[in-house]
Length: 168
Image (cartoon, helix red, strand yellow):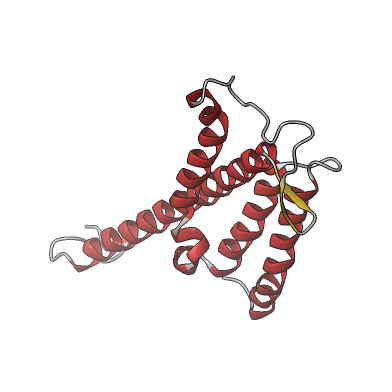
C-alpha cells in the first residue's frame, strides 16, 4: 500500500520521464544515446506507476494493455528497416537515403533508416519490459487470491479446525 503523496508524485513524474526517453531516442545520432536506452528509461517510468498504484491499477493503464502490441510493432519496424532493401536487391541494412540525397525531416529530426530502426528497438524494449513486469504482477495477484480462497475454504469447511489450538 502506498500513500497518496507517492501516487501523486509518480503521476507527476511520468510525463517528464517519457519526454526524457524521447529526447534520448532523438539525440542518439548527435551524441550518446539510442533506442535501447530510451526504451529502458520509458519502461522504468511506466513500471514506477505499477509500484505506486498496485497490480490491478497497473493493468488498467493503456501503456500496459498495449505493451504486446508495441513489441510486435517495434519488431515489424526493425525487421522492415533491415530486410526491405533485400527485396530490391540491395544489401541488408542499407542506409537510406544514400549520402548526398536529402532525407525526410520532422523538425530537426531526419528520418533515416538508423532512426527508424532505433524507434523499432525502442518499442520492442518498452513492450518487453512493461509486458514482463505486468505478467509477473498479474501472476502474483492471482496467487495471492488463490491463497486467500484456500484459507477461506479451510476456515469454512465443517470438519476443519478453526484455529491451531482447537485440535484434539
